[in-house]
Amino acid sequence: MKYVLYDILLHLTLIFTLPYFLFKAITTRKYREGISERLGFIKKEKTTGLSGQVVWFHAISVGETKAVLPVLRLLKKRSPEVKIVLSTVTQTGNMTAEADGKGLYDSLIYFPLDLSWTVESVIGKIKPSVVVIVEKEIWPNFFRNLHKRGIPLIIVNGAISLKSFRRFMRFKFFTGAVFGMISWFSARSKGDLERAVNAGVKPERASCAGNVKFDMTPPAIEASETALLENALGIKTGGMVIAAGSTHEGEENIIIGTFKRLKNDFPGLKLVIAPRHPERFNAVETIIRNTGVKYARRGDNDVDNAQVVLLDTVGELITVYSFATIAVVGGSLVPGLQGHNLLEPALFARPVVYGPYIESCREMAELLENAGGGARVQDEDGLYKTLKEFLSYPGKREKAGQAALAVIAANRGAAERSVEIIEGFIRGNKRRGYGS
Image (tube, rainbow, N blue to C red; front, side, top):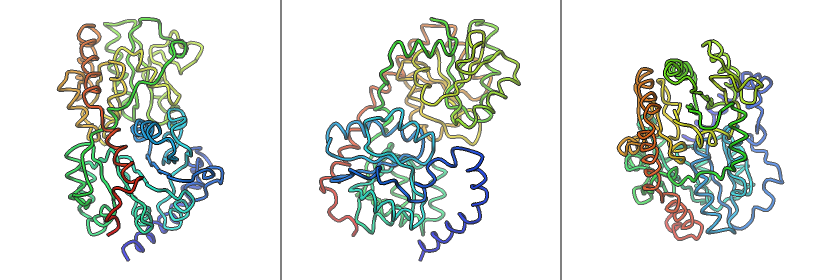
């Protein structure tokens, strides 16, 4: 009865919000992208060839997609016969999968809406042997349909924030049963493991494998590719660059305000801003223009003379981190945000600077800070002082970057542990008792 009420509520919500989404679909591309797949209509060519053992991985957006790539890479290497389906919710997640995950999956789709008929249709077409959810996605109808079919459901890099945990506990009469259908919860930290068990995951079906984001490897970046991007951003060889990545509304003004103060001491300094969401590119350009700094978008004719450059592409930020002097990771400087992956700059031995709002990556931040590879700032003044110190002392900057890289090396292994869990279910070793 609980699931019937949940399904009715979802359908009513869809009906009442339909005019809004129709308008957005007409005016905004990202709302049109993958709409048929979200409604359960998967093209035949995307399911052709999905035979034998099929593992369906689901990652909601960019962060989760990048996080799961080491797991996909290792599973493909160890079990090349396994077919992999990867789904995302967001357009940027889909684009990231296409750009960074080529060769690691056999089919890429958008995740269906959690309506009873859509999930039943898609599961029936894919016929997965195992389903793997990345980090924090909870879909009651999807979980229930898998459970009824006896398809194991695994959570890898499992994360439950304190905010989410409190919400789950308020509705435990419903969410407890949903969590109880998880075949294995592989947590990224002991805190996440404890919250998962309290939320309803059976203790014997849970473990702490660590954070798979530490298993990320730097992409193979050709020197010619780097040179082309530096040229497109107007960056001179050896010039000092602050890369502000994955920024959100409210953060650009803080970062540019800090940059303008730093320019007094470092005249040749350049700032590259990469907004988290592509739909904000034009709005961010307006924000930059209103600050009065000389700016350009990537590839503009006058980019050489620009002080601030807007990176208005998807997939190039990681390359910018490879030649940046310092990185500021967004999603952390204003209230209401929870932080983004702090490790991408660390892959290139760069100091990592971020704000206080980092609930989703707190353990990662603490590891970086304890090693001296990361710096958490509380406000704009703290950001200015921290960046000025790193820019002023190359030795300190180098030491911090090497410390950040060492943190990654010391915490690898979660991807392998996650793959071992998945392979156990593929072989059937862990299915005994499932569904009881």
